[in-house]
Image (cartoon, one colour):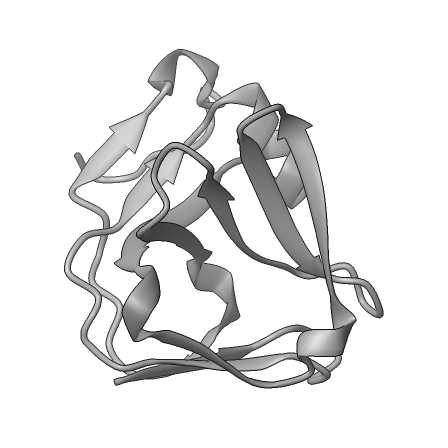
Amino acid sequence: MIEGQCLCGGVKYCYHAEIEKTIICYCKHCQMAQGSIFGWNSPLQKSKFEITQGIKFLKEYFHSPHKARVFCQKCGSPIYSYRLDLPDIIRLRLGTVTQGHVSAPPEQAYVQYKPDFLHIDE
């Protein structure tokens, strides 16, 4: 089981399974949405994901017509995203995990946008 929360603790969640796959994405959209060098995400089964506290603080932003980014409106922490054309999957932002095991990412996407000074084992 995985547990996590936003920066202010207003939103808390639980994933009733183990995380099987993680990915680092260097695309410009992930960089802007995370305010960082990359996004660290995991595709999860929506049916096993539960907001346990603070659902009223969640806000959605549709960056494109089919993709929503979901974040805490109090502190701005990105929590997950989802696509309308993949209704059973969410992409959890792994920096919000507070309990449980998260494995190293075996995959990196959009490496052409990866800063030259950053060295992550591939």
